Length: 265
Image (tube, rainbow, N blue to C red; front, side, top):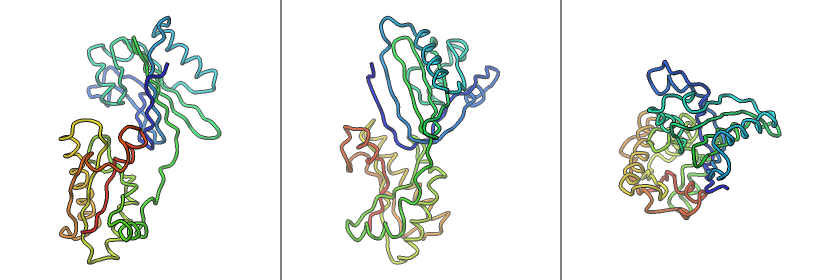
């Protein structure tokens, strides 16, 4: 029975495709494949009358019957030494890592769309993570949409700026959005703006306030250093979860709350 479902939207996701016990770093030991697409996560309680081995085997057989290619499969010590299973959480973000875990990664397709699936089975529960490969939506923010948003509301969400999870590192996929912001600021040379970061309501308030400020500062730094916007025109601030755009009680709402806005000064 599913106990939790998270629709995380467009994400870059890491699948483990091999284990090299001779490696020295996490990245050398867990060899991975990075894919991007719409990510859906399921968490399940294991059926009381089924062992982890049975669940793992049934998933593998289901993948093979469905025409999926199994990219990697391991059980217990095959997944690495028991004292180092925490690296799976660091590298993949999977929750239920344990010395007795079992894992399988597979690739398939549906209606011409590639699908990647990772399954991690622990003693009492397991999780299934599905990536529906799709190109990232481009051009969500333009000089025109920024101008219109400011005219109507005095602020606008800067769609298309992406960060590494729980970090202030701007992803390379954010370049079209940054270029659009540069175009708007160049066309409106007298305008000054606050760049304001926001997070969802998950986690520690102090951490989220700092993260939102750091993300806003990263956007300002990119616009100043890479796109030659005068620094005195921009000011970075962070509100964390204090000004939500939607409810934090749903996955869709939390996704809308994780954002950066441009506010006219």
